[in-house]
Amino acid sequence: MPNAKLRVAVIGAGAFGGWTALYLLRGGAQVTLLDAWGPGNSRASSGGESRVIRGSYGAKKIYTRMAARALQLWKENQARWKRQVFYNAGVLWMAGADDSYERASLSALRDEGLPAQELGHAELARRYSQINFEGVPWAILEPAGGFLVANLACRSVAEEFTAEGGEYCEMAAETPRVENGFQHLKLSDGSSLSADRYVFACGPWMGRIFPDVIGKLVRATRQEVFFFGPPAGDTRFEFPHLPVWADHREHFYYGIPGGLGRGFKAADDTRGPDFDPSSTDRIVTAEGLKAMREYLAFRFPALQGAPLVESRVCQYENTPDEDFIVDRHPRADNVWLVGGGSGHGFKHGPAMGELVARCVTRDEAADPHFRLARFRERAKSTGSE
Image (cartoon, rainbow, N blue to C red; front, top):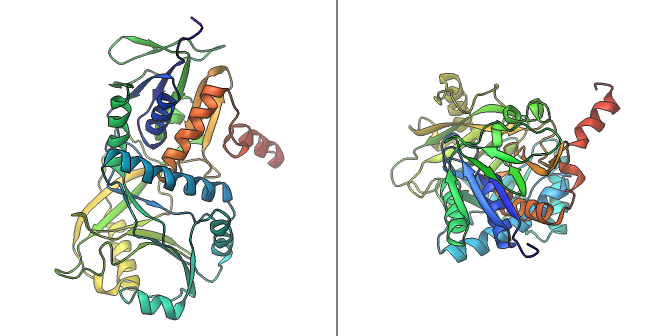
């Protein structure tokens, strides 16, 4: 049938998969979206309370560009949904003695039209007296940035997808056998699904599903997140009185102001140990909590001794260079592999959805930054192949 719609199956309803399915659908494809535990579920890298959206990426301008596009799309879609998932708190990015990353970020932000203010130490202390800026000579304030409500956003994307005519199934897909192409996908209920093209956006499970092609190129690591309760009546640590913050010095901490019924969020960006996202218990360690309390006592003195009101163990799915993966399976032109969010992917969801949908429907190649060939080329250049 010459006018038949392109049939696409998307496996994974997180930030990358959900948005990809939605933009494929809007582009005229017939789309089925699958997820084993549901959009934004507690095992997924896209689950949980909140995520930062910022454009500071040092010299990696491709992500500043994507963040600018994603921010536009987040705003457009939440207006369409009549449901707020983006909060314009601003982002305060604190520099250390080595500020080369921040200097490169300023240039990229301005090139992409994202507002950026350079604030010196004295101005920081004046504006944000609740923060101890010891060791911070200056910072970038991104007034257009802020935070996203993660779980709600994932569910909103899936709801919009079905409202616009997509088919969603809460079902697991069996590990596919890809040999000289790919014909159909076996599902956990014993049925099978056939499509013209398949997009696997399986987050931390990518390496397990494709051990020969992805394998250790996507490594899931255990990450602890803490929520502390400020003193009663003290709104200095809540939205909109405090921006999202990132303390980019020898050690990288970041956090999101309280509000929306949640506590003051703080996390350590250091990659944790390897983690099984399917079966491991998610309980924070006493050591992690102690280290975070010590940090808060230093950087946010009024929160010293603040009660821990919530905690969460999530995971990053890291690539070796922290760049995303968007590429065809080397043995199946109709299979696309999308992942490697590396702890910073959520904000880019709608921009990634646009990009992947374009690649899938138009048979376009992704940007070289995202192709699998970069790993082979790097291995050859270092003699580690």
